[in-house]
Amino acid sequence: MSDLLADLPAYVADSEPWFRTALRTLVEQPTVSPGQPDIAAVLAGVEVAAGVLSEAGAEVEVVPCSGTPSLIARFTHPDPKARVVVYNHFDVQPANPENWEQDDPFAFEVREDAERGFLYLGRGTTDDKGPALCGLRAASYVASRGLPIEVVCLWETEEEIGSPNFGEVLEARKELLSGDCVIVSDTVWPNAAQPAISTGLRGGLQARLSLRTADKPAHSGLAGGAARNPLRELAALATAIDGARFWREDVIPVTAAEVDSYARSGFDLDYFMRSHELRMVTSDVPVELMLALWARPSFEIHGLCGGYQGPGVKSIVPDHGELKISFRLVPDQHPDRLWERLEQFVRAFNPDVELERMASFVPYRGAIEGRVHEAIVHGMTEGFGKRPALVREGGSIGAVPLMEEVLGVPVHFLPLSLPEHGYHAPNERFDWRQAQGGIKAFVHTFAKLAEG
Image 1 (tube, one colour):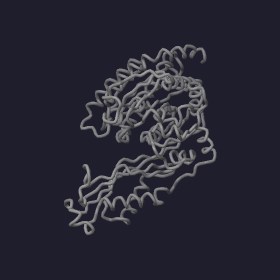
Image 2 (spheres, one colour):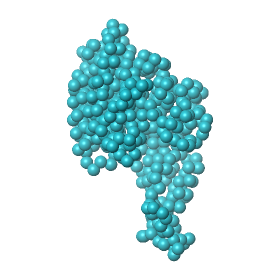
Image 3 (cartoon, one colour):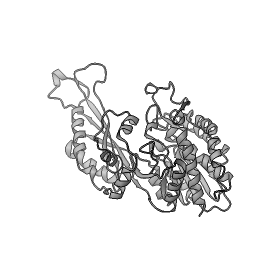
Image 4 (tube, one colour):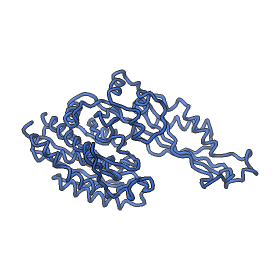
Protein backbone atom coordinates (compact mmCIF):
# COMPACT_ATOMS: atom_id res chain seq x y z
CA MET A 1 0.00 0.00 0.00
CA SER A 2 2.89 2.39 0.76
CA ASP A 3 4.07 2.11 -2.85
CA LEU A 4 0.67 3.28 -4.07
CA LEU A 5 0.95 6.37 -1.84
CA ALA A 6 4.53 7.24 -2.78
CA ASP A 7 3.60 10.36 -4.71
CA LEU A 8 1.03 11.61 -2.17
CA PRO A 9 3.20 14.48 -0.80
CA ALA A 10 3.74 15.85 -4.30
CA TYR A 11 0.06 15.33 -5.17
CA VAL A 12 -1.08 17.30 -2.14
CA ALA A 13 1.47 20.08 -2.67
CA ASP A 14 0.32 20.45 -6.28
CA SER A 15 -3.36 20.50 -5.30
CA GLU A 16 -3.59 24.12 -4.18
CA PRO A 17 -4.39 25.64 -7.60
CA TRP A 18 -7.10 23.02 -8.12
CA PHE A 19 -8.46 23.54 -4.62
CA ARG A 20 -8.54 27.33 -5.01
CA THR A 21 -10.32 27.16 -8.36
CA ALA A 22 -12.84 24.56 -7.24
CA LEU A 23 -13.59 26.39 -4.00
CA ARG A 24 -14.10 29.65 -5.88
CA THR A 25 -16.49 27.88 -8.23
CA LEU A 26 -18.55 26.53 -5.33
CA VAL A 27 -18.47 29.56 -3.02
CA GLU A 28 -19.60 31.98 -5.71
CA GLN A 29 -22.82 29.97 -5.95
CA PRO A 30 -25.06 31.53 -3.22
CA THR A 31 -26.68 28.25 -2.18
CA VAL A 32 -28.53 29.66 0.85
CA SER A 33 -31.15 27.21 2.08
CA PRO A 34 -32.93 29.02 4.95
CA GLY A 35 -35.50 31.65 4.06
CA GLN A 36 -35.08 31.61 0.30
CA PRO A 37 -38.11 32.79 -1.71
CA ASP A 38 -37.32 30.18 -4.33
CA ILE A 39 -34.77 27.43 -4.94
CA ALA A 40 -33.30 28.73 -8.20
CA ALA A 41 -29.94 29.64 -6.64
CA VAL A 42 -29.57 26.24 -4.99
CA LEU A 43 -30.49 24.41 -8.20
CA ALA A 44 -27.96 26.48 -10.15
CA GLY A 45 -25.34 25.64 -7.55
CA VAL A 46 -26.15 21.94 -7.79
CA GLU A 47 -25.52 22.03 -11.54
CA VAL A 48 -22.15 23.71 -11.00
CA ALA A 49 -21.21 21.30 -8.19
CA ALA A 50 -22.07 18.34 -10.42
CA GLY A 51 -19.50 19.64 -12.88
CA VAL A 52 -16.81 19.88 -10.17
CA LEU A 53 -17.54 16.32 -9.04
CA SER A 54 -17.56 14.96 -12.58
CA GLU A 55 -14.28 16.67 -13.48
CA ALA A 56 -12.71 14.94 -10.46
CA GLY A 57 -13.45 11.59 -12.09
CA ALA A 58 -16.66 10.54 -10.33
CA GLU A 59 -19.88 9.10 -11.68
CA VAL A 60 -22.34 11.81 -10.67
CA GLU A 61 -26.06 11.64 -10.02
CA VAL A 62 -28.45 14.37 -8.89
CA VAL A 63 -31.06 12.76 -6.63
CA PRO A 64 -34.36 14.69 -6.37
CA CYS A 65 -36.65 14.86 -3.36
CA SER A 66 -39.58 16.96 -2.15
CA GLY A 67 -37.15 19.78 -1.38
CA THR A 68 -33.83 20.56 -3.03
CA PRO A 69 -31.80 17.64 -4.44
CA SER A 70 -28.63 15.96 -3.22
CA LEU A 71 -25.55 15.01 -5.21
CA ILE A 72 -24.00 11.53 -5.23
CA ALA A 73 -20.52 11.14 -6.73
CA ARG A 74 -19.22 7.58 -6.94
CA PHE A 75 -15.61 6.44 -7.35
CA THR A 76 -15.91 2.75 -8.18
CA HIS A 77 -13.54 -0.23 -7.95
CA PRO A 78 -14.14 -3.72 -9.43
CA ASP A 79 -13.26 -5.52 -6.19
CA PRO A 80 -13.46 -3.08 -3.25
CA LYS A 81 -12.50 -4.16 0.25
CA ALA A 82 -14.49 -1.28 1.73
CA ARG A 83 -17.21 1.17 0.73
CA VAL A 84 -17.21 4.56 2.42
CA VAL A 85 -19.72 7.40 2.11
CA VAL A 86 -18.25 10.85 2.76
CA TYR A 87 -21.05 13.24 3.71
CA ASN A 88 -20.90 17.02 3.35
CA HIS A 89 -23.51 19.68 2.73
CA PHE A 90 -23.54 22.17 -0.10
CA ASP A 91 -26.06 24.67 1.28
CA VAL A 92 -24.95 27.62 3.41
CA GLN A 93 -26.21 30.14 5.94
CA PRO A 94 -27.36 33.61 4.84
CA ALA A 95 -24.76 36.40 4.90
CA ASN A 96 -25.44 40.07 5.67
CA PRO A 97 -22.77 42.20 3.91
CA GLU A 98 -23.07 44.86 6.62
CA ASN A 99 -21.27 42.57 9.05
CA TRP A 100 -18.52 41.40 6.67
CA GLU A 101 -15.15 42.84 5.75
CA GLN A 102 -15.92 41.79 2.17
CA ASP A 103 -18.35 43.89 0.14
CA ASP A 104 -19.96 40.68 -1.08
CA PRO A 105 -19.70 37.56 1.12
CA PHE A 106 -20.21 35.39 -1.99
CA ALA A 107 -17.30 37.00 -3.84
CA PHE A 108 -14.48 34.55 -3.13
CA GLU A 109 -11.18 36.07 -1.98
CA VAL A 110 -7.72 34.62 -1.34
CA ARG A 111 -5.11 36.15 0.95
CA GLU A 112 -1.58 34.95 1.62
CA ASP A 113 -0.84 34.07 5.22
CA ALA A 114 2.55 33.36 6.78
CA GLU A 115 1.23 30.60 9.05
CA ARG A 116 -1.60 29.10 6.97
CA GLY A 117 -0.26 29.52 3.45
CA PHE A 118 -3.50 30.92 2.07
CA LEU A 119 -6.76 32.07 3.59
CA TYR A 120 -9.90 31.47 1.52
CA LEU A 121 -12.65 33.97 2.34
CA GLY A 122 -16.37 33.80 1.62
CA ARG A 123 -19.61 32.25 2.81
CA GLY A 124 -19.40 28.46 2.71
CA THR A 125 -15.59 28.18 2.64
CA THR A 126 -15.45 26.22 5.90
CA ASP A 127 -19.12 25.28 6.29
CA ASP A 128 -18.97 23.08 4.36
CA LYS A 129 -17.56 23.49 0.83
CA GLY A 130 -13.85 23.56 1.71
CA PRO A 131 -13.92 20.32 3.74
CA ALA A 132 -16.08 18.72 1.03
CA LEU A 133 -13.38 19.39 -1.54
CA CYS A 134 -10.75 17.78 0.72
CA GLY A 135 -12.71 14.52 0.73
CA LEU A 136 -13.29 14.79 -3.01
CA ARG A 137 -9.61 15.38 -3.80
CA ALA A 138 -8.62 12.39 -1.65
CA ALA A 139 -11.25 10.15 -3.26
CA SER A 140 -9.99 11.13 -6.71
CA TYR A 141 -6.43 10.24 -5.67
CA VAL A 142 -7.14 6.75 -4.31
CA ALA A 143 -9.34 5.96 -7.31
CA SER A 144 -6.64 6.97 -9.78
CA ARG A 145 -4.09 4.81 -7.92
CA GLY A 146 -6.38 1.78 -7.93
CA LEU A 147 -6.76 1.33 -4.17
CA PRO A 148 -9.43 -1.32 -3.54
CA ILE A 149 -12.02 0.97 -1.99
CA GLU A 150 -15.23 2.53 -3.23
CA VAL A 151 -15.78 6.11 -2.10
CA VAL A 152 -19.13 7.84 -2.48
CA CYS A 153 -19.29 11.59 -1.92
CA LEU A 154 -22.76 12.58 -0.73
CA TRP A 155 -23.49 16.32 -0.82
CA GLU A 156 -26.77 17.47 0.70
CA THR A 157 -28.49 20.84 0.07
CA GLU A 158 -30.82 21.15 3.09
CA GLU A 159 -28.56 20.67 6.12
CA GLU A 160 -28.89 24.28 7.27
CA ILE A 161 -32.66 23.90 7.59
CA GLY A 162 -32.56 20.58 9.41
CA SER A 163 -32.52 18.11 6.47
CA PRO A 164 -36.34 17.92 6.22
CA ASN A 165 -36.35 15.95 2.95
CA PHE A 166 -32.98 14.22 3.09
CA GLY A 167 -34.54 10.98 4.27
CA GLU A 168 -36.14 10.61 0.83
CA VAL A 169 -32.69 10.71 -0.78
CA LEU A 170 -31.36 8.09 1.63
CA GLU A 171 -34.32 5.78 1.04
CA ALA A 172 -34.08 6.18 -2.74
CA ARG A 173 -30.36 5.26 -2.83
CA LYS A 174 -30.17 3.09 0.27
CA GLU A 175 -28.45 0.16 -1.44
CA LEU A 176 -25.75 2.35 -2.96
CA LEU A 177 -25.11 4.29 0.27
CA SER A 178 -25.12 1.33 2.66
CA GLY A 179 -21.50 0.26 3.05
CA ASP A 180 -18.99 0.12 5.89
CA CYS A 181 -19.56 3.60 7.28
CA VAL A 182 -20.36 7.24 6.72
CA ILE A 183 -17.63 9.80 7.43
CA VAL A 184 -18.78 13.36 8.13
CA SER A 185 -16.45 16.33 7.74
CA ASP A 186 -18.64 19.11 9.15
CA THR A 187 -17.32 19.62 12.67
CA VAL A 188 -14.69 21.77 14.38
CA TRP A 189 -11.44 21.28 16.32
CA PRO A 190 -11.37 23.03 19.71
CA ASN A 191 -7.88 24.39 19.02
CA ALA A 192 -5.83 25.07 15.89
CA ALA A 193 -2.76 23.31 17.32
CA GLN A 194 -4.38 20.01 18.31
CA PRO A 195 -6.29 17.73 15.89
CA ALA A 196 -9.52 16.39 17.32
CA ILE A 197 -12.17 13.86 16.37
CA SER A 198 -15.78 14.56 17.28
CA THR A 199 -17.39 11.51 18.87
CA GLY A 200 -20.87 12.92 19.32
CA LEU A 201 -23.27 15.73 18.49
CA ARG A 202 -25.76 17.61 20.59
CA GLY A 203 -29.33 17.43 19.43
CA GLY A 204 -31.65 20.38 19.35
CA LEU A 205 -35.17 21.71 19.71
CA GLN A 206 -36.27 25.12 18.44
CA ALA A 207 -39.49 26.84 19.43
CA ARG A 208 -41.33 30.12 19.03
CA LEU A 209 -43.41 31.40 21.95
CA SER A 210 -45.87 34.22 21.30
CA LEU A 211 -48.23 36.25 23.45
CA ARG A 212 -50.88 38.77 22.38
CA THR A 213 -52.45 40.91 25.10
CA ALA A 214 -54.19 43.67 23.08
CA ASP A 215 -55.33 44.61 19.58
CA LYS A 216 -52.98 47.59 19.37
CA PRO A 217 -50.22 49.24 21.43
CA ALA A 218 -51.44 51.40 24.31
CA HIS A 219 -50.07 54.66 25.78
CA SER A 220 -48.15 53.70 28.90
CA GLY A 221 -49.36 56.81 30.72
CA LEU A 222 -52.97 55.91 30.08
CA ALA A 223 -52.82 52.11 30.36
CA GLY A 224 -49.47 51.26 31.97
CA GLY A 225 -49.85 49.30 35.17
CA ALA A 226 -53.28 48.06 34.10
CA ALA A 227 -52.51 46.59 30.67
CA ARG A 228 -50.56 43.34 30.56
CA ASN A 229 -47.16 43.76 28.95
CA PRO A 230 -46.35 40.75 26.70
CA LEU A 231 -42.63 41.46 26.57
CA ARG A 232 -42.33 41.57 30.34
CA GLU A 233 -44.28 38.32 30.65
CA LEU A 234 -42.21 36.58 27.97
CA ALA A 235 -39.00 37.79 29.62
CA ALA A 236 -40.19 36.36 32.92
CA LEU A 237 -41.04 33.09 31.19
CA ALA A 238 -37.56 32.91 29.63
CA THR A 239 -35.98 33.46 33.05
CA ALA A 240 -38.14 30.72 34.54
CA ILE A 241 -37.21 28.25 31.79
CA ASP A 242 -33.53 29.05 32.29
CA GLY A 243 -33.77 28.10 35.96
CA ALA A 244 -35.97 25.02 35.47
CA ARG A 245 -34.94 21.38 35.72
CA PHE A 246 -37.07 19.85 32.95
CA TRP A 247 -34.56 20.42 30.14
CA ARG A 248 -31.66 19.06 32.20
CA GLU A 249 -33.18 15.59 32.71
CA ASP A 250 -32.23 12.26 31.03
CA VAL A 251 -28.56 13.20 30.60
CA ILE A 252 -25.94 10.42 30.42
CA PRO A 253 -23.16 11.49 32.81
CA VAL A 254 -19.80 12.13 31.21
CA THR A 255 -17.13 9.57 32.10
CA ALA A 256 -13.76 10.25 33.68
CA ALA A 257 -12.11 9.00 30.48
CA GLU A 258 -14.04 11.54 28.43
CA VAL A 259 -13.03 14.36 30.75
CA ASP A 260 -9.39 13.28 30.44
CA SER A 261 -9.71 13.34 26.65
CA TYR A 262 -11.27 16.80 26.75
CA ALA A 263 -8.34 18.00 28.84
CA ARG A 264 -5.95 16.74 26.13
CA SER A 265 -7.86 18.55 23.37
CA GLY A 266 -5.83 21.73 23.69
CA PHE A 267 -8.88 23.85 24.52
CA ASP A 268 -7.61 27.35 25.20
CA LEU A 269 -9.93 29.88 26.81
CA ASP A 270 -8.27 32.96 25.30
CA TYR A 271 -8.22 31.38 21.82
CA PHE A 272 -11.87 30.36 22.19
CA MET A 273 -12.91 33.89 23.13
CA ARG A 274 -10.85 35.50 20.37
CA SER A 275 -12.17 33.11 17.73
CA HIS A 276 -15.80 33.86 18.59
CA GLU A 277 -15.12 37.52 19.50
CA LEU A 278 -16.59 37.02 22.96
CA ARG A 279 -16.09 39.61 25.69
CA MET A 280 -17.51 37.45 28.48
CA VAL A 281 -18.14 33.74 29.12
CA THR A 282 -20.00 31.85 31.82
CA SER A 283 -16.87 30.48 33.51
CA ASP A 284 -13.13 31.07 33.51
CA VAL A 285 -12.46 27.37 34.21
CA PRO A 286 -11.66 25.65 30.87
CA VAL A 287 -13.01 22.21 31.84
CA GLU A 288 -16.33 23.78 32.86
CA LEU A 289 -16.66 25.41 29.44
CA MET A 290 -15.76 22.17 27.66
CA LEU A 291 -18.42 20.30 29.60
CA ALA A 292 -20.94 23.06 28.91
CA LEU A 293 -20.19 22.95 25.19
CA TRP A 294 -19.94 19.20 24.62
CA ALA A 295 -21.56 17.21 27.43
CA ARG A 296 -24.39 19.27 28.91
CA PRO A 297 -27.68 20.54 27.50
CA SER A 298 -28.16 24.26 27.03
CA PHE A 299 -31.01 26.76 26.70
CA GLU A 300 -30.62 29.88 24.59
CA ILE A 301 -32.76 32.92 23.78
CA HIS A 302 -32.27 33.99 20.18
CA GLY A 303 -34.66 36.89 20.03
CA LEU A 304 -37.33 38.80 21.97
CA CYS A 305 -39.44 40.64 19.44
CA GLY A 306 -42.22 43.20 19.73
CA GLY A 307 -42.86 46.74 20.83
CA TYR A 308 -40.98 49.81 19.64
CA GLN A 309 -37.60 49.16 17.98
CA GLY A 310 -36.66 52.66 16.75
CA PRO A 311 -34.28 55.24 18.24
CA GLY A 312 -34.95 56.59 21.69
CA VAL A 313 -37.92 55.44 23.74
CA LYS A 314 -41.56 55.40 22.70
CA SER A 315 -43.74 55.07 25.78
CA ILE A 316 -46.15 52.35 24.75
CA VAL A 317 -47.34 49.07 26.17
CA PRO A 318 -46.82 46.55 23.32
CA ASP A 319 -49.80 44.56 22.08
CA HIS A 320 -47.87 41.39 21.31
CA GLY A 321 -44.46 39.78 21.65
CA GLU A 322 -42.51 36.78 20.44
CA LEU A 323 -39.76 34.79 22.10
CA LYS A 324 -37.43 32.68 19.92
CA ILE A 325 -35.64 29.94 21.86
CA SER A 326 -33.77 26.69 21.41
CA PHE A 327 -32.31 23.87 23.46
CA ARG A 328 -29.23 21.80 22.71
CA LEU A 329 -29.63 18.19 23.81
CA VAL A 330 -27.14 15.50 24.78
CA PRO A 331 -27.47 11.69 24.92
CA ASP A 332 -29.99 10.30 26.11
CA GLN A 333 -32.28 13.28 25.76
CA HIS A 334 -34.95 13.31 23.03
CA PRO A 335 -36.66 16.36 21.48
CA ASP A 336 -40.12 14.77 21.68
CA ARG A 337 -39.88 14.26 25.45
CA LEU A 338 -38.46 17.74 25.89
CA TRP A 339 -41.29 19.28 23.84
CA GLU A 340 -43.91 17.65 26.08
CA ARG A 341 -42.16 19.00 29.19
CA LEU A 342 -41.81 22.45 27.65
CA GLU A 343 -45.52 22.57 26.83
CA GLN A 344 -46.43 21.54 30.38
CA PHE A 345 -44.08 24.11 31.89
CA VAL A 346 -45.32 26.99 29.74
CA ARG A 347 -49.00 26.17 30.31
CA ALA A 348 -48.45 26.12 34.05
CA PHE A 349 -46.44 29.34 34.04
CA ASN A 350 -48.53 31.36 31.59
CA PRO A 351 -51.43 29.60 29.83
CA ASP A 352 -51.95 32.51 27.42
CA VAL A 353 -48.62 31.93 25.69
CA GLU A 354 -48.86 30.07 22.38
CA LEU A 355 -46.11 27.59 21.44
CA GLU A 356 -44.94 26.61 17.99
CA ARG A 357 -42.46 23.81 17.51
CA MET A 358 -39.83 24.51 14.89
CA ALA A 359 -36.88 22.28 13.89
CA SER A 360 -35.61 19.46 16.10
CA PHE A 361 -32.61 17.13 16.04
CA VAL A 362 -31.79 13.94 17.91
CA PRO A 363 -28.38 13.89 19.66
CA TYR A 364 -25.80 11.44 18.38
CA ARG A 365 -23.10 9.45 20.12
CA GLY A 366 -20.56 7.83 17.80
CA ALA A 367 -18.18 4.92 18.18
CA ILE A 368 -14.75 5.44 19.76
CA GLU A 369 -13.35 2.05 18.80
CA GLY A 370 -13.33 -0.35 15.88
CA ARG A 371 -11.82 -0.54 12.41
CA VAL A 372 -13.24 2.71 11.01
CA HIS A 373 -12.42 4.74 14.09
CA GLU A 374 -8.84 3.48 14.12
CA ALA A 375 -8.51 4.24 10.39
CA ILE A 376 -9.58 7.84 11.00
CA VAL A 377 -7.21 8.19 13.97
CA HIS A 378 -4.43 6.88 11.72
CA GLY A 379 -5.43 9.20 8.89
CA MET A 380 -5.53 12.33 11.02
CA THR A 381 -2.24 11.46 12.67
CA GLU A 382 -0.61 11.11 9.24
CA GLY A 383 -2.35 14.22 7.90
CA PHE A 384 -1.59 16.59 10.77
CA GLY A 385 1.38 15.06 12.57
CA LYS A 386 -0.36 14.54 15.91
CA ARG A 387 -2.67 11.88 17.28
CA PRO A 388 -6.13 13.45 17.57
CA ALA A 389 -7.90 14.00 20.86
CA LEU A 390 -11.48 12.75 21.27
CA VAL A 391 -14.09 15.39 21.99
CA ARG A 392 -17.77 15.96 21.38
CA GLU A 393 -19.34 18.60 19.16
CA GLY A 394 -21.52 21.36 20.56
CA GLY A 395 -23.56 21.74 17.38
CA SER A 396 -26.16 19.57 15.69
CA ILE A 397 -26.36 17.87 12.30
CA GLY A 398 -29.82 16.51 11.68
CA ALA A 399 -28.61 14.26 8.85
CA VAL A 400 -26.28 12.23 11.10
CA PRO A 401 -28.77 10.22 13.20
CA LEU A 402 -30.95 9.99 10.08
CA MET A 403 -28.14 8.35 8.08
CA GLU A 404 -27.41 5.87 10.85
CA GLU A 405 -31.10 4.95 11.10
CA VAL A 406 -31.88 4.65 7.39
CA LEU A 407 -28.59 3.22 6.13
CA GLY A 408 -27.88 1.03 9.15
CA VAL A 409 -24.19 1.94 9.26
CA PRO A 410 -22.10 3.79 11.86
CA VAL A 411 -21.38 7.49 11.33
CA HIS A 412 -17.89 8.76 12.13
CA PHE A 413 -16.31 12.21 11.99
CA LEU A 414 -13.15 13.59 10.40
CA PRO A 415 -13.16 17.29 11.37
CA LEU A 416 -11.14 19.89 9.49
CA SER A 417 -12.53 23.30 10.51
CA LEU A 418 -11.30 25.59 13.29
CA PRO A 419 -13.15 27.96 15.64
CA GLU A 420 -11.49 30.93 13.95
CA HIS A 421 -12.97 29.91 10.60
CA GLY A 422 -16.32 31.36 11.62
CA TYR A 423 -19.09 28.79 11.26
CA HIS A 424 -22.35 30.70 10.64
CA ALA A 425 -20.49 33.95 11.34
CA PRO A 426 -19.34 36.99 9.36
CA ASN A 427 -15.93 36.77 7.64
CA GLU A 428 -16.08 33.00 7.24
CA ARG A 429 -12.86 31.44 5.96
CA PHE A 430 -10.91 28.24 5.41
CA ASP A 431 -7.16 27.83 5.00
CA TRP A 432 -4.69 25.83 2.94
CA ARG A 433 -2.88 24.29 5.91
CA GLN A 434 -6.11 22.66 7.04
CA ALA A 435 -7.01 21.73 3.48
CA GLN A 436 -3.75 19.97 2.68
CA GLY A 437 -3.80 18.17 6.03
CA GLY A 438 -7.37 17.18 5.32
CA ILE A 439 -6.56 15.71 1.92
CA LYS A 440 -3.73 13.67 3.47
CA ALA A 441 -5.93 12.56 6.37
CA PHE A 442 -8.68 11.33 4.04
CA VAL A 443 -6.21 9.51 1.77
CA HIS A 444 -4.56 7.69 4.67
CA THR A 445 -7.98 6.85 6.15
CA PHE A 446 -9.13 5.39 2.82
CA ALA A 447 -5.87 3.47 2.43
CA LYS A 448 -6.18 1.94 5.88
CA LEU A 449 -9.74 0.83 5.16
CA ALA A 450 -8.67 -0.57 1.79
CA GLU A 451 -6.38 -3.00 3.60
CA GLY A 452 -9.53 -4.87 4.62
